[in-house]
Image (tube, rainbow, N blue to C red; front, side, top):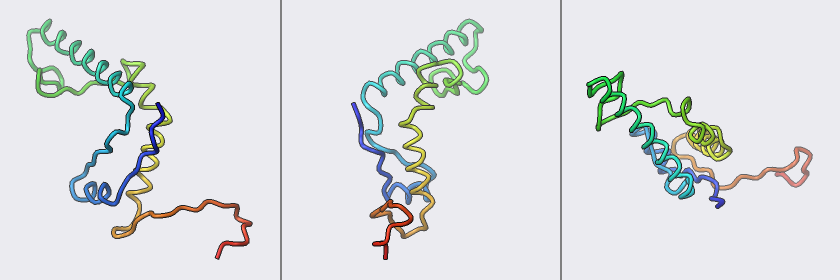
Length: 121
């Protein structure tokens, strides 16, 4: 399932400048999202099992049932494949382009043509 290129709006850029984050709705196909959820659940379960084995509720920065810092890119081929995918490269490129625009500016049209194009004003 091909999804449209990520669209980063001026509202996204404003939220990032004001709050340090924003959400891109429906950037992932449902199958991609399910794969990532399944892998995260597996990694959380593994960390919980390790805490149970050790008889603790806190291990490194992880706190059982509250927050987890997992190195998924190192232990999950599915997560690693996703993080280094063309989709994530496209998202990163769109985000960086949008956030580099001066406040009050919007990208409304982009024209790409050969440098020898004579019709350019």
